[in-house]
Length: 130
Image (cartoon, rainbow, N blue to C red; front, side, top):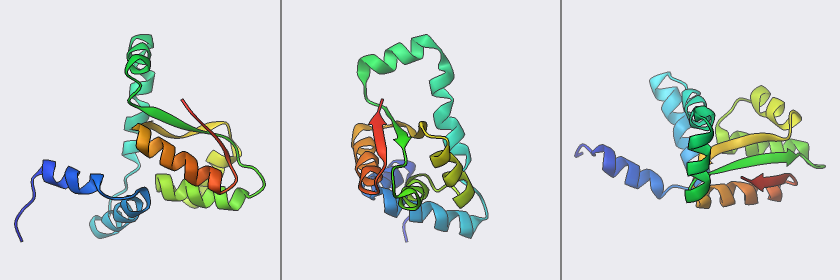
């Protein structure tokens, strides 16, 4: 098997759905005995960059935050969707849902944000994109 370059790998990942990507991350974590918790913290870091970074992001509007406003009647379904979207553990996903309004995904592209919003709303949650 030929070794893929970083760019080729990224192109392959772009073709995956969020659920497929989440399953890949879980399998990767198991095989290599690592956790993917760091990307969540990295995604939050640019938001704390200051007013200049926020103003620039608003002008381009190429990255969105998916904010869970309320869990609705089907809280368990919403927790399952949060876990699928973020690869959080059960307790962390439950805490996120309980602390609504809270950002589920930060700094994602428009397509991923709309897809996540549709999944969460399908589970009964109230969601906004920022």
